[in-house]
Length: 470
Ligand code: UDP
Ligand code: UDP
Image (cartoon, rainbow, N blue to C red):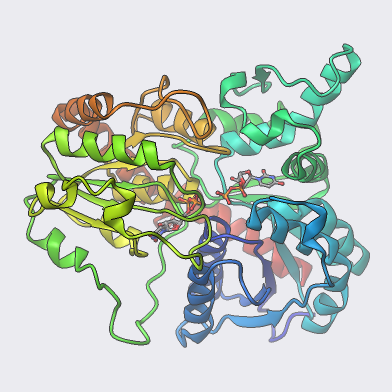
């Protein structure tokens, strides 16, 4: 039963990592704000990273959103079963095993609908079904990745039927496009990998969802969205609601805004569109050798730059000093004045919306790309891991920016040299067309989310269904 009159009560269930939590927070605010829903977020505490802890705290504290918290307490989980596994994948697995505990939480909350993260979908859908609660998936990556995820199990089945069990080749997603073997997320080449097992189960489970929300918009990924909606990717595929780009949320700061590096002030002092912003997301550290080449490339590019250096997988881990990370050869001294380098957390959305930023060198995490699209800032795609090559192809296809496909990704032989980085940055910064095309993507993003736009209506349709179900 909904909690108050005709207001549907939507319960959101993010998994682990900022890449998943950020879009869930944005959806929570969109639903509880203008869309007339009561919203609860099921949270697992403690979070894996401190960035997630701060984000949740701000979300629940913001009086303007009145998003409620439901504590999802996990069953005991022995991580030693998976030695060396990525801490975020371990959190996914711990949550997956605790899925049956959600049943009573949903009943107690009187949920009209549940929106689960893709990483938990296959185990959460049956629990919601048993309780008679409609269950949707928020897919936090691209529609291209959603199509890949929905089709990948069929690719594996075909490989097994042809006697090549488990071997992954180029993946020809019907109605969309071919994902070359070299763009398939690294882990998926190993059928025994924890991520592969979760990924395949979730891909198979998608058809049982009542609908899939995707943080993208029709004009950004027309082929993938159409193919999914027409059932070309998988027959009987549920409705796809392209609701993005989910808009950044600004919580009123609880304390004076933290900016020890002073990057916003520094940006204020730079000329329009002159700064190259460099960030590889919140999930992975770059190898020390590659970091040094990147440093050399940024220096040789001659451009101003703001670089967020990430040296550990989980931010609670001890990080080395910047000087040590970058080789301590005087780099920081040499670029002083035209660069700001920090290893702290930054407010990326604010940076991308700042008029002095002219280019975003990005690992192509999907949230970063949706933020770049919303801001109309061109992207130089440098995918490193996971779904990022599939996302980089979206950058190239949509003309949001450029992708140097030859550049290696994480764990591959061969570094991208400083010289290559410098040349590419210089070329993209000098190309007026790149900036113009990115601005056009920005306009299309704004049109999609404005009243009457495609994403506006998709979200309205989703809310209508939740209301009817309540
Ligand atoms: N982010 C940020 N400040 C940082 C690093 C990341 O605000 O210093 C945000 C970024 O804006 C994005 C999210 O964290 O919303 C990262 O998600 P994304 O999908 O881009 O990449 P991931 O970190 O999952 O690889
Ligand atoms: N993903 C998926 N199925 C899963 C788990 C993840 O499709 O079972 C997607 C997820 O949305 C993400 C991508 O695969 O975009 C890579 O997942 P991961 O958690 O490694 O990336 P993150 O978003 O944490 O950087």
